[in-house]
Image (cartoon, rainbow, N blue to C red; front, top):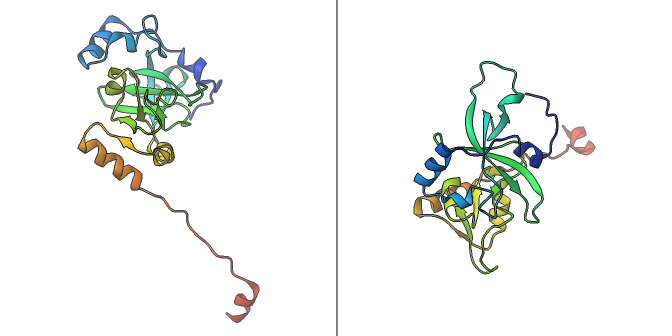
Length: 195
């Protein structure tokens, strides 16, 4: 574990670098238009390229903060996650080759809360299976980045629109997982005396 110099997600996100032509080409092949990842041409948070190290529990660290020379450093895309009011929540890292998604601080379960969809309150919340399809849609909806943290938000949604049947089944399985707390009952004095 490392000591974090600061916990400002917005500042941390800008530690990344602008995308290169090879990144834009790869994203275009995945169906992602350039305007949704290029802050100069789009109205969205920029997608940046950053060296990271994945950790347990769907978390990551910036590679520059890791002293372990044996840590596996990967070039990933980072996106600033905001809350529904637009305040910075966390940084999300996405590594397309491995399909891994992780958060820096572990404070958000959904990417896209600031613009969940352009629909009305009666329409379903659109949930995408991974960041590429979310970016390709113009970021209209959300992506699950941490199941445990996303579960309450998704359960509070009136209805959910999944990408396909398999994705819908995966969401249903995720939402039905409930970890109940251990329940204990204190022993009362009169019960202890009878024993």
